[in-house]
Every structure is written in structure tokens, then in C-alpha cells.
Image (spheres, rainbow, N blue to C red):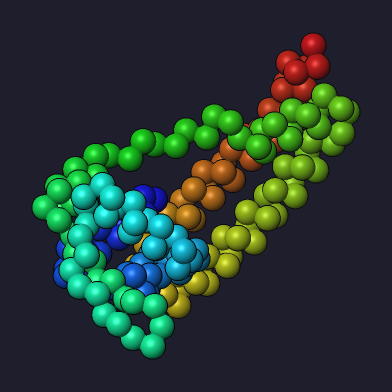
Length: 174
């Protein structure tokens, strides 16, 4: 996820302080991985330097000065371009799990155990996500669906690999 573009998009609704941006980000996108304040301010500093935001006002308070940021026309154009650009599909061609299976075969360990353990972990994660999905709002349901579909694809791969384990053993140990 591009944090800079996400913060710019949040600024399109109007100027905000860094604290407000962090809160809005965490509310909408950061359920599982909230932003750190330092990340917000370093990102805003970079966006400011690149002319994508400007300081709309500074408020003095009991602590440090609070800058209010506003998106510039260049920032709006940048967000529009980012939104219109499709994300590159992640093909997962460098799978750690595949590496573990092959290394288990090469070292004469039980690769089936690795696949079984991973299957159990995937199923556990799927149960947790399914429960979260049942209790969540629409945004949380969609996020959980995305994760569940990926886990289902992984499970299909685990089953396929388990079915081909003897053949894979022949290929990698030849």
C-alpha cells in the first residue's frame, strides 16, 4: 500500500493535521497495521518537499506546533494517476513454503509433515478471519474476503503439492 497516496487521498476531503490523518488512516485502513506517528510526519515531509501538499496553517498549543496540511493540485493529479494505475498481480514465484518443501526433500525430512502443519495453520487463520468477517462492518468483511480467497488458493496449492510429493521428490533429488 502506498501510504503517501493514501494520505493524499484522505486530504482531498479537506486540510488536516498529522494526528487527524493518522486517526483517519487507522480507522479506514489500519485495523491490522496502524501507522506510527513518525511514519505520518516523515511521509508528510516528503509530500511537502515534492509539492504534493502544502502547509495550510500552523497552530501553537501546549506542545509542538501543529501543522495543518492541504493537498495541492499536483497532489490531486498524483492521486488520480495512482488510482487509475492497476496494481501488479503478485505471482508468489518465490514462495518460502515451496522452498521449505524442497529443502525437506533434499535433506530427507518429511515434507508431508511440513504441508500438514501449514495446512493446519492456514485453516486456523481462516477460522479467525471468518469469525472477524461475521462480526465486522462491510469494509472489514471485504478485507477478510480478500485474505480468505488468498488462503483458499494456498490450501489448493498445499493439496496439489501433497498429491505430487513423490514426483517432486524424484525431480529434486535426481
